[in-house]
Length: 96
Image (tube, rainbow, N blue to C red):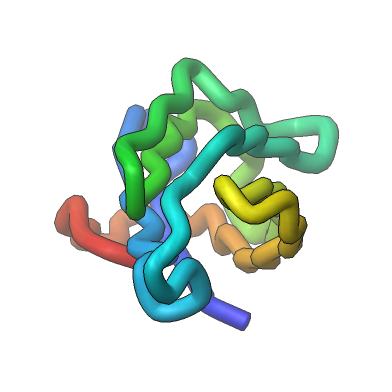
């Protein structure tokens, strides 16, 4: 499971490269879900990657985030991420 960090006040975008799982297929659909307390502000995808923008969360709390992807061959996989909200951490946008 991938671990992500953010400050409670920050709004950050995280990218998930699914190309290894996809092989020669492409993303037909992608949906992000998060536990109550952290907010998904937006989500998008290309043929091989997904993106989610997160805001909120309470300092000292960990949240589970999931990305459900269905590929062009009809296969579905759920990828899970832990988001740790901490005060005063330096976070750079990047790939999951």
